[in-house]
Image (cartoon, rainbow, N blue to C red):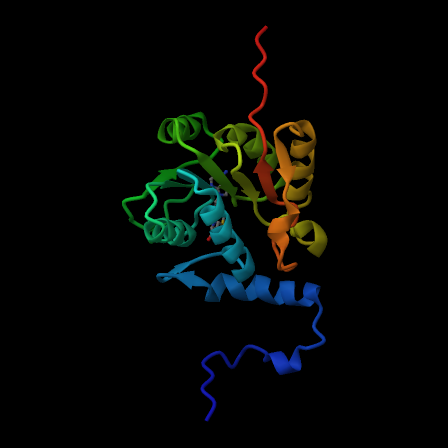
Length: 226
Ligand SMILES: C[S@@+](CC[C@H](N)C(=O)[O-])C[C@H]1O[C@@H](n2cnc3c(N)ncnc32)[C@H](O)[C@@H]1O
């Protein structure tokens, strides 16, 4: 007997000629409904989820700022991973929407509001002061928003830590927003080439929603005194 609770999905033996593009479209529809952590949605493909875990374990941030936390599934998973790592790190989850299912965990601080609002930036500044920071940008993915977020939040990323910009794949899939976040990433890295590099080794599975979206801070920017 074959038990198949997901028999509305195609099976691999019938998909061996599927292209990566076709798989991406398929997954883009399916993962929103079927990927969860502790009953909360995690809007991330499994490969990027594993890479995120690798990054957190490799770099050991003391504060992780997640911009766009939705149901809080990813924030809760990061908090649970940090528990397992016996880390003292905190997670700051920011979202414009106060979802009723928002998670509760001693490591998680939820900030409700526009991530670019001065009062939210002030709270982030206060909560992350003196801590080795990492930032994950997963909000609306529009070029303009992403560009502004990169400029406002890069100071929270510590040397040898990452600024992860999600969903840069939209550029290659011809789906909105137009223009998307990849243009913002390219401009940002060009403007900050002394302190950030695109780390393509984090795309080791090829299948990623974040091509060129793993930005490693290699140096603190020079402080210029007038
Ligand atoms: C793709 S979902 C985030 C998914 C989540 N990071 C995960 O991995 O499951 C995008 C979220 O960003 C939020 N958002 C959009 N624009 C925002 C902004 N300017 N500031 C804060 N949150 C924003 C939306 O409300 C939405 O919940």
